[in-house]
Length: 117
Length: 113
Image 1 (cartoon, chains in turn cyan, blue):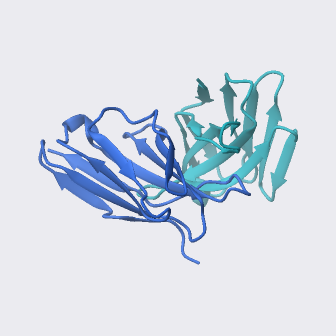
Image 2: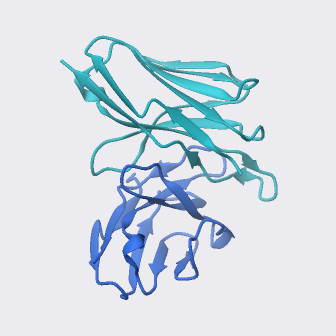
Image 3: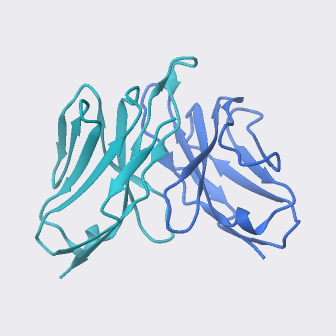
């Protein structure tokens, strides 16, 4: 089955600096890679995602890059703000060919991001 | 419309008790997923429904765990004879068939004493 590894486990940055979180996956059939932000006591919130036919996607201060050959993808947050402090999870999923639907997400272990003013 | 809702938000059970956790998906979402999140870990897949059909239950940790979605909307995750290792946050997510994004509810925090 799929295995997703995420690094680093904790990341401290000064407000205004950039943050980068990296993930690797093992299953070459994976073709959908979302990133979630989870605040204390809340469920994961989708912040950006990328499909395997795209190498990079950007949404304001957030960008994701994907290297299918190397099986790794990264989240980039620029101009970090204190409200970016949270736990971030990467995940991977493959199209379930038997049901023709998107299957389960395999999550990384998470990165605790702390943005200090 | 409203997002995914879950109830109760918190549940304390004595070891050996049965519990039932409810998930109300986003209206019209065909797919529904259950995940278990241990403290400090990423969510782990439990089971998946497409309408009322349970298509994948490979993540259920034991036969004490049972999930249903009889009318293809609301889903219930039931845990029988709870054990301390069942303590976790149980997350529900839903998605449409057309789009692949999974939207999560706030979770139910289960504590087994």
